[in-house]
Image 1: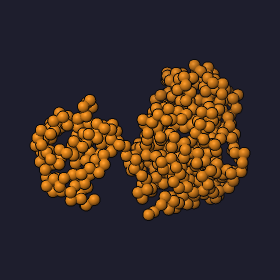
Image 2 (image 1 turned 60 degrees about the horizontal axis):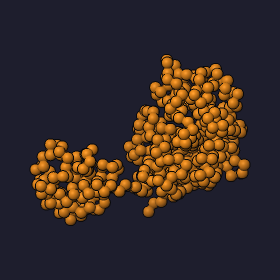
Image 3 (image 1 turned 180 degrees about the vertical axis):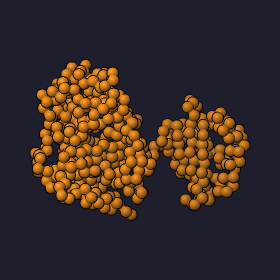
Image 4 (image 1 turned 120 degrees about the vertical axis):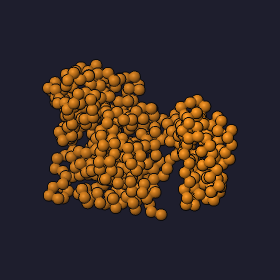
Length: 457
């Protein structure tokens, strides 16, 4: 059987060649463990804007502790930010605006990437002069790194400590992310930054910038191993929605981080058109093959990175490169798609709740032996109006006559009211049944569909 490394290895080699990347450290995470990796998973790279997910998580920790609100004007916490106002009578800027990229502040990647180490005095002067806006506050998505400097200032004014302190104390230490730091590593196991010049990669002559006022947008250094734990921790809130054994940040707040807040639009890449939304420190895409995918990229002089996971499935891809703006998002997307096509991404179906399970089994019993009185208490009143019960009975009897009785193999669901039944008939034919319950208290089915796959299972 083809393994993960055989599928991913050539993709990584192609990316390294195409983008002149001296090093790429990558990993595929399945159910919380690194199932395959290339390069050293503990080698440190700068992860740039992937830092935003850590900053947002730390802010939500403080919010949940009652230390601040993300929905009041930031000027209530940091009066020096009062002069930063959007155009055309914009509403006051809140932390939620800044975290969701809806403040209206103009996109600033090239500039911000060279000012990560901005001093407090420099930041104060910029705030007093008034930054440029692209849109009214709250009107639409506009990516702003400066906005994360404002987040950092609010946190410091409220708590007396910088964002880096709260990320380290409340997230990195409890989660055991021991190789993730805010400062350039003090050991030798880190990937040196490179730039492309004259068709090849050379060591970047400009040393990596240190920690400063805008660092909450992109200052962290990390590894594949630590990011595997980070993506697992975030996705666990979706994969195990009822879990009460949580660390650092409640599952409800982690899910809030991964919920759409601002429409980015249709993003096209690698022959794929994907509706994309920005959340709080991460983005989410509706991928035609993979389903809901959560991700964030990072790019700074000398580095490019990406983390990407399929929501609720326990599957993630991570890639860290050491050349300026290496497009690792392209690589992680190709990794997940290739693994899907090779059948190497395991399913993680949710077991159906008891009431859904009972309705599903009653439906199969009815299909096997239709009795005109049996639908009582099983179907919502729309079912007979949508297609009369005589026609439904005739279809069930025809299925039995052609293939025999239906036998359930599994019942799974994607929500509290939707179930998918995998079954087989007496002659081996695969039978697929989907059903949806009505929004009523007595678990009545509002629709169902039966499909017989003619090839023997």
